[in-house]
Length: 173
Image (tube, rainbow, N blue to C red; front, side):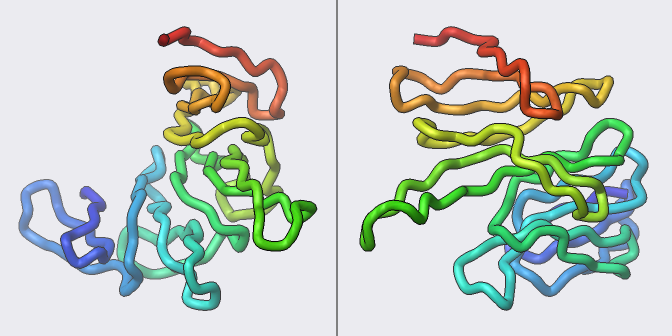
């Protein structure tokens, strides 16, 4: 089976032989990813309680058991290879700025597959974007693409799941 988002923005499931297509959600979705164990589908969708914010949800492949995992405005879910954790991106707003001016820091988080224990591992100060988290096969590191405002091009970085040992892998000019 495959999960995908149709032009209407809804999440669907289809058999590989295309014999059955089933709508799984009624939310406007993007950023869908299936767990490696095929037991859950993670996706990003608009949060009905929070206008303008997107959140990460999971749902069973049959469309049951939909659950909202985040409440901080999040997207870009990426399952760990053992399906025990999800990496995701969220913007942190600096509320110490004067009214009318806010610094926004795109940041990398990890959480358990049920949404518990959400941990900030990269605070994106000086980053104009941070995206595309990808797990190492041994579940110990996450690679991501980011653009440092002090550099010319976006780069690839890797960090361990505890937020230490951040290394820049590329030096694109």
